[in-house]
Image (cartoon, rainbow, N blue to C red; front, side, top):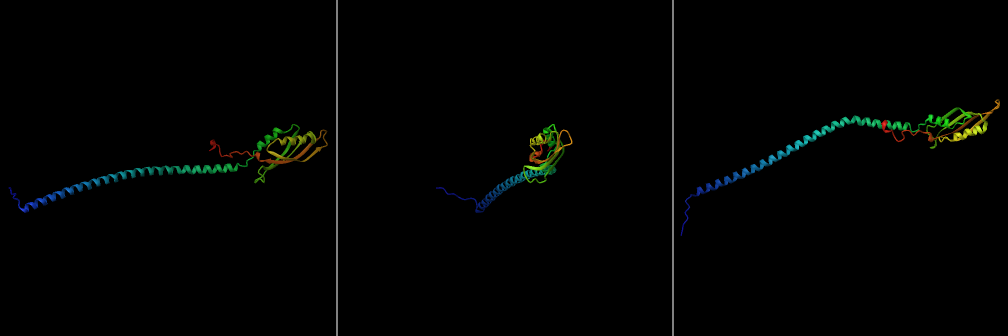
Length: 207
């Protein structure tokens, strides 16, 4: 039979427990401080990265704003070019080439006839879509009313830009040995006389 005898007084035991509790609390506080330090370091790192990304984005944004400011002038020029092209196309929409009309006349003129006057009147706002004006022609032919004047009318009918031709008058000069017929005729100028230049916009080399 054995008997255990407590040789430590009660006060000593209490001090030991208190010291152990303080050590445990200090360790817990240290662990908490380390954890807080880790969290603070991680948060600081995230903030620095976010600041770096913000600075980079701001630099890119500043560069884009500078480029946009430079492009404003070019955009204004492009808009003015488009407006000028629209005005040009609209102004040439009803263009008629009188030189083309003269060439057509020269190609079909009979050898025994001549034109003294040619008047072409174009309508500002045509009443018909297929007719844009009228013409009046006076002239002379060496072979009388027929076949001279008749041949003149048939020749003019070959010009696609003319139509609805009719004879106003045809008179003979009785004083000459060979009768010369002086005639006057009218007709319509068809829409085909338009040049249709730039109707689909300016060609690339003019832009």
